[in-house]
Image (cartoon, rainbow, N blue to C red):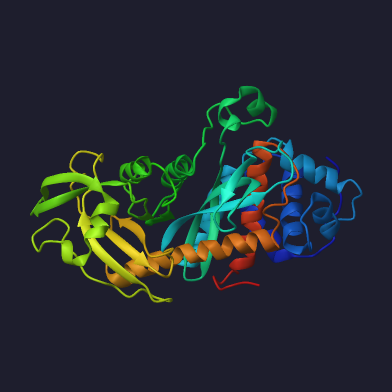
Length: 388
């Protein structure tokens, strides 16, 4: 790769990037990593490699070098993400690890993971990539620290097509719930210290059982929006859990309403709650969750019907393992999803999240890693306050 000279002085951002890129084995890789990061922070408009290069260097070959750095230079993006997560958590007093989805529109069919997908928000289908992200979230905002790329249809089954964009043989994520399961395993493996609850809206997914079982295997608490079809245990409870519980759909339990729960039943209602921010009513019942590890299936979970706020339409079902949490704590966790949605919007509008020009699987992950790092720096300054 060519050398070039970084011409825009931004010493704080360079110092921020040093630990993120310390694992890169070659000096030229570290130099172009800084250049890409600075370009994302300073370039205006579409974040093409040409505009990124023009914003920070006078080298005529810089755009070619940046393209090579992101697409073909062999480097592992995971250590950068781990360092980014640790940096963000030290500054944010995080409440949760929150999962959200980014829809990245594309014109052609050749970029890795591109497919046609119905978009409920617009009522139309779109040609797009779908990224599923894990965010560190607090009252300060949300910072993305890990990503999975959806690989549906032929991207899952066509070996030749997968080889063409360099998808590793062991990578399979055809559905959102499969991607979420991978993110959960990654966050548990790579993090030390205090474990945070996971918040995710999986109400539009088909089978969320594997996600919930993964959360339980990893020892993580959670608050998850679930489809009405989710099977739960409902019945009478004793001191150690439930007895004579039967499997029913979560939707059928919610239809009982507060008046339908018996005083001594496992689904005894806790009444309505007022969430923080926009008013919302939350009806709470206690249920069990089948299919967990022995001794945990009967552990009480809270099933909530959320109306308004983060809920959609007349109500949305949420399940949480935090049965002993307060209404205020649950409301704060529900609010984290709004933080991630704002972050996704900003990354698309200001940081070039959808502007990746390559087609490869490694290139997509490297670009998303750099966008996440640029967004984190912009969002959190050294004192942990909101940045510009």
